[in-house]
Length: 178
Image (cartoon, rainbow, N blue to C red):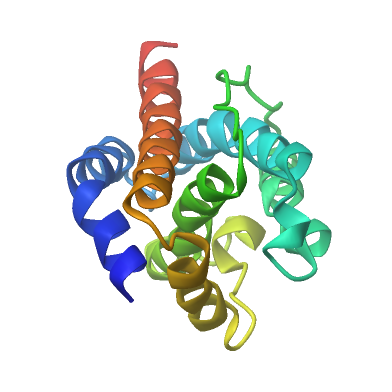
């Protein structure tokens, strides 16, 4: 798991900034949960679209059924909220960058499962309840060593993952400033 460890170490600060930005919302309140979902939606939808256009289906089995933006849109609608203005998504120029972007989104599913515990049962939570299919994360993480076989490819993946984290951070700020 050399590539996964490299991605984790190189993006730790960016990941912590995103966690802090979204962690500022009290998910137990309607207002806090709404802001959290709006921030997530502003980033997730355009990032998933960019990943789709770059060929995510080649790296993630059943990618189209696996995407979470529709679940997020449904949760917002159930709360009576429209989808927010999207932040500009990063572009993924090659397979290494695609792997870096997917690393962030696939890893966020595990965080979503933990955050779900803080959300009252009366709130819509399809987005945070979206589970990883058994073995999917393990298979994807293992594939990173094959995909990111050189320092240059790992650097490209780190750059893409960092841009995805930046996109989420920008979306979190957008919600706070609105």
